Each structure stands twice: as C-alpha cells, then as structure tokens.
Image (tube, rainbow over the protein chains, first blue to last red):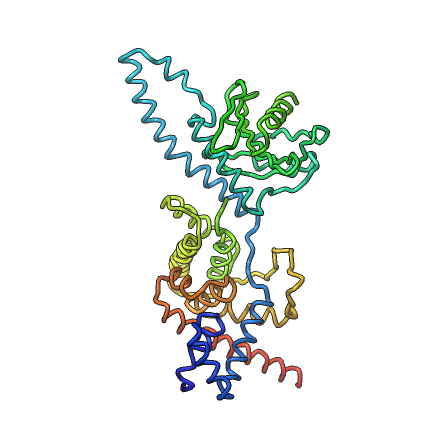
Length: 250
Length: 166
C-alpha cells in the first residue's frame, strides 16, 4: 500500500468504518511507515481532544416550551378546520332529519375528540415514558415542588395530592401534549408499578368514572370541575380504582 | 416527546453559531417534520430529522447573510449541560476554547461533517443520509476538514509557544 492509498483509510480506521481486510492492510502499512503512523497519531489526538472538549450544545428549556406551544397551535388549526366542516355537515343533516339531539349528545371528552382514540394516545404516552429515562420533568416526592412546577407551563393547576399514607408514592410530573392539548402528567408509584395521572383543562362539567381496557392496560377516565382526568397503569385495576377514588375525593 | 431535539439543536447551533437562531431553526424543522407526518422513531428518523435541520439552517444562512458566511457575534460559550461525565478528562479551558474556535471557524461544509462525526458520533452512512451526498464524498470532506483543523490547531500551539517565549 502506498501512503496516498493509506490517506483516507487512516480516517476510516479512526472512525471504525473498516472491515477486517481493510483493517489488516492499513495496520500493516502503519507498522511499516513512520510518516503515516505519525499522521494517524495526530488524527487520534484530534479525535480525543474534540471528545474531551465536550462541545455539544445543549438546548435550554425555552426551546422545549416553544415546541410545545407550536405543536399545540399547529395541530389545532387543521382539526378546527376539520370540525367546522363536520359541524356544517351535521347541522345540515340535523336540519333535514331533525336529529340535532345526536349532535349535542356527542360527548366532548378531550377537546371534542373521541374517547377511545384519546385513551389509546394516553396509553401510548404512558408506555413511551416508561421506555425512556424521561419519566418526569420534575422529579420530586414533594407535592409542593411538583404543583408549582406546572405554573406557567399549563393554564390550569393540576391536583398533586400526597397519597403516601395509602401507598401511592409521588415520583414527579411532566408536561405532555395529548390530543393537541397541553396536559400535566403526575407520576405516582405503587410498589413497582408506575401510575400516570393525566390532567387537562379541556373537560366540561363532571362525569362518572369510566374504565377502559386497551391491550391489557387499564385506564380510568372522568371529568371533574371542567377538568379531564385519565389514570393509566399496569397495576391491578382494583388498586388503580382506589387511586382514582382518592384523587376524586381529594 | 421531541425526538432527536438535542442532536437537532446541537447541529443547528453549530451551523448558525447563535442560540436564538438555532432555536428558531429547530422550531421550524419540527414544524416541517410534523407536517410531513412521518414516523419519528428509529435511526433513520434521526438522519431524516438532522437532514431537515441542516437544510433549514443552510436556507437560513443564505437568506439572512445573502450567501456570505460572516462570523456572527460569537457569544461566549457556556456549557448548559451541568452533568459532567466523571470518566471524561476535560481539556484545560484554553485548549478547549481553541478546539471549539477552530471548528467554529471552518467553512460550513467542513464544519458540518466534523460536528456530525466527532460530536454527534454519526457513522459515514448516516452522515451521507443527512447531507444527501455519497459516502466517498463524506470521507473526502471529513479528511479535508480534519487536515484543516490539525493545521489550525498546530498554528495555535505554535503561536502560544512563541508568545510564551517572547
């Protein structure tokens, strides 16, 4: 191998991009050629220096906030457009066949979306959080730390009761976007099970607690004082029900 | 929630060299990505996201700087990530600043391959996917970029040595 041929292979070796044959031939050359060996050593030093300099820029929290706001705004416009059409069509239909009642009785759970779909979205969000290290934005077992954290991030103040006496341990909270709406996720632990309580301000009035079962997971949904609540976990549904009753009764 | 946001921001920040513009570019890139309605998962999604960021940043530089890559008022670099890896031996501050400055002073086409390879740790294939160029071009640009860096840093060291002697 000539030094010219070795040129780009030096970089490929440094970047672990060579196969066994390539590696063997460049290593043979390096053992024979002092000039290329010195060159390789300087590239290696550069590589190590850049790593040691730790030069990645980390985004500030302001960026995440901007994205949440943008996402909420962006997803809202097409869906509003869509519901307008839907509304017009329904009003026409209602006028012609006199079933306006149907339209009015369509439950508006989470910003008028359909509850099954939202349940699936909640479960998705819950599972995603479990899979990553990002379970909480604010890790704290202190309700007086978690509750104020949401101030300025959500337009409402989610309930963060201390339920440790009943063996539901507060872990923290995080911000989520569920069905185009910002939602607070309050995270509790029951033994080894994580319970996510999703709260958003998009509810209307009060409703009974409903149980949903999706893929072996249990979800409870209810509305209380114009707020929407979802509780989701793989914990025993009886325990989850106890949790829900405690939250409702707080 | 925001897949690859960290990598997206890092790339944008290196390309436009200013916090505010980098945030705007990431925001615009996510908007484009959401509009495209494609899945965000997997390593291909990362390449795709970075590709959007890169193109958005290039557009931004062209639009705002009328094609001339003038050095922006470089803000003093302050690390935001307060969790240092204890295993990692940090360079002394002045050397670190030299390395950072040398990368920052590279032409964008060389800077981006260094950032993607040396800072983001992407493979040649992934870099080719982000920049939409053949792997051979990735290799030649990377080797050119490293040679430029080595030359610049050698000059810095020489400057420092002679400065110290004087």
